[in-house]
Length: 171
Image (cartoon, rainbow, N blue to C red; front, side, top):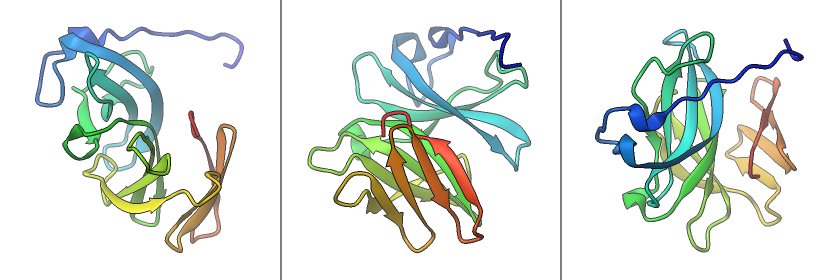
């Protein structure tokens, strides 16, 4: 229903501390995206977060069908090596059997939109060195697909010829 909207607040500070974060000290949680996990047959949310004022990382968790509560403890999806810089604003696309994670890197001197790959939706993801080309708007990832960043929309053309659209929040 696009007329009758509802929302739910999830208090991440109530989550138990774990190896990812001390959730009681979470500084922020934002830029949520959802993707269907074919293997688990569940909706997965991935989001940017950080502990206190530390470096931003990307985490994931499963949510219930009503999208009103987490059904799993958040887990790390991707982080910069040694958390040396921030990584934020993720989008995931599956092409063939490979998952492609696009994220915004705050690494000094790096192009802002970076790319990592995994054979599993939940990772681990490995950065592969592919990134946006010179004009920050045209991005090539191998021979698999090309996408164009225009405001908040990216059009992706996979090997099978299907076009998939996704929003890139801070593209």
